[in-house]
Length: 386
Image (cartoon, rainbow, N blue to C red; front, side, top):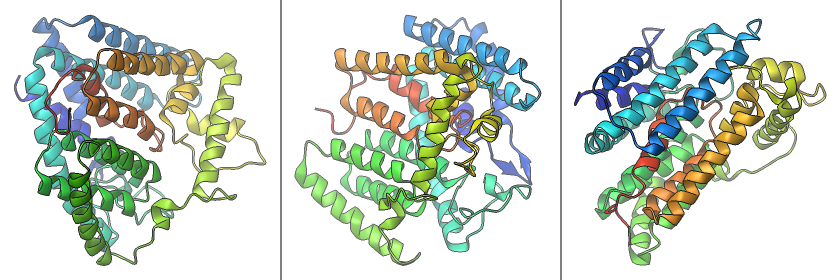
């Protein structure tokens, strides 16, 4: 049992598009159901909150599967299968935390460090060579080439996904790290990642967390950020000409990235007015945008680039609102119960970052952090906690 958290978290970090010899790795499909079976045999006791969350995800997944079965003419059966695996994965994460909190926390800390140590060399390789390893979804020979191919993705399908997960990892590690030189290296590395991946929301999220992280010590903040900035400038100098526009370009003219996202958001919200607001089924974004999006506002992307819009399109108004209300309830509970403020900050920024990834539904590792925030919110002793 002591290896189970490690195996599950590793499988989650590898991402849904991890390849080995052009074949997808499906470790999560084996581990998640197996873990649920083993933990049920262990008769793990669950808290009221854990039982509530398991119940919600069960209803959410079953409802979405039922809706999907009415639209099999455009729904990919593989998406239905992955959604079922997602339910097993969520339950396994919750039960592992309930089974042994300390074991799960230790595994996550160690594997976050491993994630950084493994991903940074791959990241540097992609930046220097403009090529992708088989672990990346971009290495799929069947994937069409497009303008963002040059951006590093590491284990994921695009740069925003990598920046999203890397930022979650960095925030988690910083909340537990007190050594100034380590903090400087982590901050510098994360600034480089969000700069080169051109992920604006990851940049804003990371900056917000750093401002909160350094709230207790201005001197520590100045020293650490100065050292990080020097390292950032030196390293960026070896890649290309420094251009703040890579992350500070908020141009919303027609055809720009922000303009396309606004179109996707507008179109996604309009999905509530179709199909009686019941949703179109899992993985239906391509069908929805191609059929219902306004003809005079064409878009190239077929993913909403917003987790909550993805839930809205797939599962309808009730499920999307339920998801938002549960997150709001958990946030309010953290505030009223005086939870660890660094964890609360991560919880808020996590929801901001859910708006950055092209498709977060099967981006397994972000669920690990979500449940970590929820079930470890009262833990004390992290760096910077007053």
